[in-house]
Length: 245
Image (cartoon, rainbow, N blue to C red; front, side):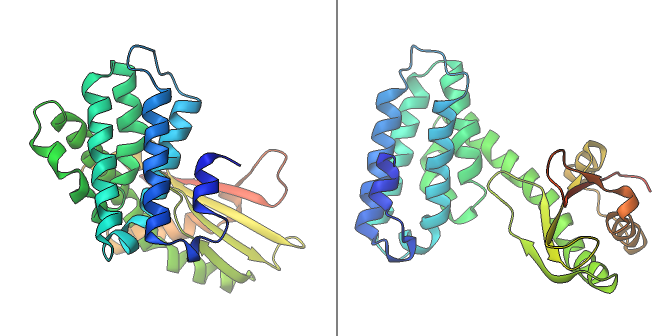
């Protein structure tokens, strides 16, 4: 169990604001202490620590920071410390801060105000803008998939799928996952739905499909002939939606 796991505990529903503050502060100190600005950061452990910090901020931030000033202060301190790291870091360290932490934290709009000082800082402004743009683009793609979700679920139900569940997006993910039982095979099946690169580019540029095109997307997604089965994972399928159908 990591230091972070121990600070949070196994039952996140009972985590107090003070425990959260200590966990965030401890994790941020660990990140700053272990990632030296003069060392290259190419991925691996440094990115994993950054992603874990972003996950904690997203999971606990909106509910606790809004009602507990001590927790809110811990969030602001984390933003300041990450800003200090970005300010003195090499390009690879800066990319780690933006790509592993800031972009994912900004998936939760309620957390952006904790980084508002970055917006006004001549050094940190670029990182703030990059993370904001990335999060906005991700949300556009997610919005299209969320539009398709209920229709895809209904269509799967019509063709025999039972107990359909739609899983929430994982942090940083633009894949919508469906889970069901009782159709095509015993046990549970999964279908990961994602947009092809050309569709992503169009959506990011402002494309909004008409209702007829939305229907074509739903038809495409729910046709098993368009599915591919994940290697070595029986019952796990994926489908990629192209721009033009």
